[in-house]
Length: 106
Image (tube, rainbow, N blue to C red; front, top):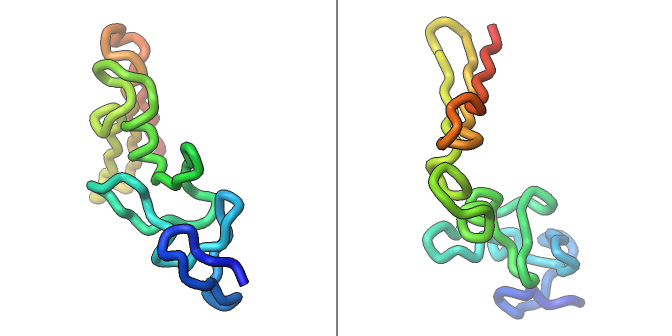
């Protein structure tokens, strides 16, 4: 029976989540960023040096650097609840405003 890489306790079949080549307890598979610790689902996260990270933390910590790239400020999502419109804004390159992508779905 394999041991969980986080708590080192045995992982039984009924509680097993397989990710990054290891079997984890569901609550043990969480983001390695101390400020986040979000519980992750198998296959929907990133990995660096054998450690799991949520996609947002991975991008902020290991993604491209610079204003508008990487961190939390680089993606803004809006939903218009009253009209049913959905709008997604993503700043691709803040120094060149011609590359700002805006998608409207009616």
